[in-house]
Amino acid sequence: MTPINDPTALADQEQAAHRELYTTLATMAANGAAATGRAEVTACEAPAWLALRVAQLRADMTAGNGRACTHLMAGPRPIVHALWHPTIVACPDCAPILCPDPFEDSVCDHCRKPVALIHPRIAAHGLMLLLFGLCEPCRRADEGPAAGHHKASHGRAHQSRRHRRRPR
Image 1 (tube, rainbow, N blue to C red):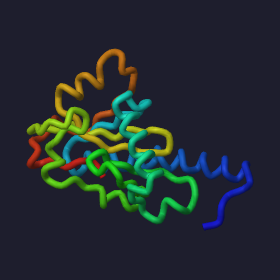
Image 2: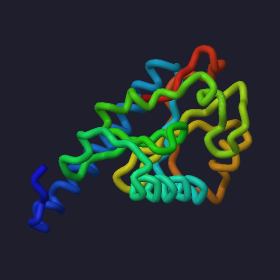
Image 3: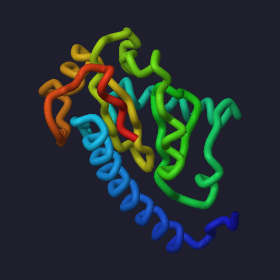
Image 4: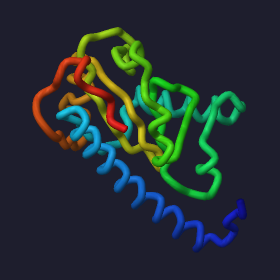
């Protein structure tokens, strides 16, 4: 990898990465809707609890306790992180490696309680797409009047866990 030393070139690459991030977010939401009948996209600043998870991921990666796909070394580009894999990040092309195991696919990523129904979410945080699932109480708390974010829902009502998969 050749480092980008020109500030103008770096800024251009970062702008392109942000465009790719939002294109990827829309694609992942559409794929989630096609696969599950419903995917919900949260385009917002990450809530405090999510920002803490990102801070922990950064600390783990800095300490050498994480894994990243090699495509992320090529320069600024979107990073995909699934909260159920706390120390793994991937580029959008490699995001399928982040599929949850059956246990994690039934655990709320906020309160960590096992539940029968998970509400999948995709949130943008800087150049990172965060994949996570919430139980109903955490979803309601996250979408409270103080949350101040935009949610776009696709498809029909929630399906049982047996028939739905997290967005990819």
